[in-house]
Length: 307
Ligand code: ASP
Image 1 (cartoon, rainbow, N blue to C red):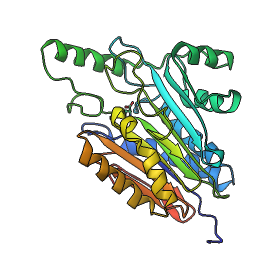
Image 2 (image 1 turned 135 degrees about the horizontal axis):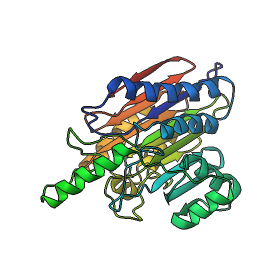
Image 3 (image 1 turned 45 degrees about the horizontal axis):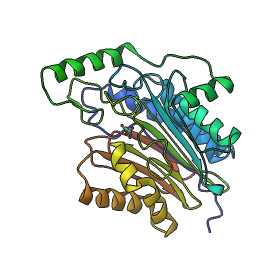
Image 4 (image 1 turned 90 degrees about the vertical axis):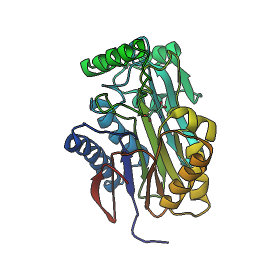
C-alpha cells in the first residue's frame, strides 16, 4: 500500500467533434471543474463532494450540454438526466427527463440521500425537486434554440440529422459532463449530467442516470461515459469498466478495453473516463475530441481536448 494518499479527480466535457468551438474556453471549463474537485479532495473531503463540485461548475457553464445550455429535444424542451454514485455501499441517486432546474446533479444527490429510491423521472422528479427546495429555472440558452432551428430546417430539407455527438462543423458539439474521483480514504464517486441528444424524443432517457451504464462507482474505481447513450445502456459500459478495475487493471487499460469491446459490437460515439485505486486515470474515446482534465496528489492539473 502507498502511505501517501492517492487522491485524484478526472472530469470530461463530452465526446464529439468539438470543431469550431472556443477550445481555450472549453479547456478552461474542464480545468476549473477539476480544480474545484481537487480542492475538496486535498481538504480530505469525500469523493462525492469533489465530483459534485466539478459537475455543478460544468452544468452552470453554457458551453457544455448539461444544466444551463443543455441540448433540446424535438419539442424544444431541455429534459435533463443526471446521476451520482458512491463506491462505498454502492449508493446511487439519479434523475431522468427532469425539466426546469439549474443543477440536476444536486437533485440526483437528494434522491440518493433523502429517498429509498435510485431513479426519479419526469414529473415525479420535478415535484421531488420542488419539494426539496430546488427553484424553477430555465436552462435553455439562445444558442441551443438556434441550434435546434438549424437542425429542424435540415430535417425538413430531408438532410440527415446530425446528432449531438455527430454534429456538422457549424452545429453545436457541446457535450455531456462527468467526473470521477478517489478520496484520501480510498473512497470513490462518479457523477454525470447531460441534456442528452439534440432532437431526442420527449421522454427519452440516456445512459447518464442509469448506474452501470453512463455512471458507476465501486470500491475499486469509478467511471463516467459520454456518447450515444443507447449503446452504453445496452452494453453496461461503466459497470464493465468498474469490473475491470476490481480485477486489478490499470484505469487506462480498463477504459481502452471496454471501448474496444464496444467497438467490435457497435458503430457509434463513445467516450470514457475512469480512476483506479492507485489514483491512476483512464481516458478513451473514439471521437475526434473529448475535453477532459485531471489532477491528483501526484498529478499536476492538466486539461486536454483529446486523450
Ligand atoms: N451520453 C449522453 C446521452 O446519450 C449524450 C452525450 O454524452 O453526449 O444522453
